[in-house]
Image 1 (spheres, rainbow, N blue to C red):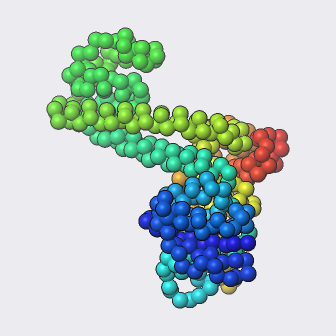
Image 2: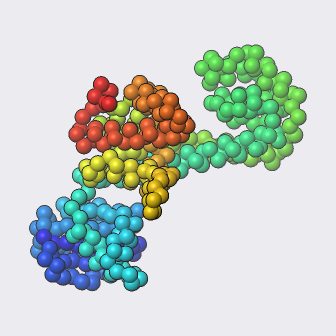
Length: 386
């Protein structure tokens, strides 16, 4: 068996190769992060059978993605390590603080030899795709929310009565009116009631139409050309981002339907949420039990023991913040759509736990269910839950 440790960096990668007996085959080798460098690395591995090559590397985000795709295309498997685990492994070996790319490669190789080999999933590429899209979607949603805050700030000066009229919510009708008219003067004189009703799908009465016109006529807001221009610009930016989010949703939906993971069968878990959870966890078969998934998501409580003192603290919150956010939101949905999860939530509430703590318990139960469904490849069945 051949073990290879690779230290990933932006422009080059360092590797260390040894046999299962500890014999060093390649001590120091750097190859560039390009086609020539990848081919140099592939040529080095040609004498060995693919099934006898174990490759380990740190999870370094997008820096190592091209290399991982190259390895997958050439039928090589690899195992990723959390950098924090590698750092702790180094501390267990020596007290010296020597950190170089070549040393890191040898450490990763030794770490690889010390644990059971759990290679990458065959759906690695799909996981990468939906993970990238999900994170981009979250970024765009945050940007869209910022635009809504900017719209509120502008309207507080131009037309402070507008947003309260729509129950402090930017509905599609509210945004349509702002984009179509764009100033209090134009809203006060608007006459095209039919187009507004059509856009609102009949949910905007004529009495509301006349009341809004009266509010615009008697507003305490001050007309300002610069702010009206900013309003138009922000509305265009919001509309553009919203269109992009819808486009991403379609892409994610196409991929997740093709994969059709068992997690999608859980009531309340939609395609977008499922895609985010599955892609962030990656290959769930790598986890030996649900507790490892909890730890990966940073949802496990910290444990403090010293002498006679023993206590459990707050969540450690390590790992992907995006994953934790998605799981907590998913927990809200499953207690709405599944009586089993709601009963569990209610049980925790009657035990005196506050909403957030009870929800975190539901989240843990959800992870246990996801682990069972994905590792056994079965559909959700509430009658089998305890």
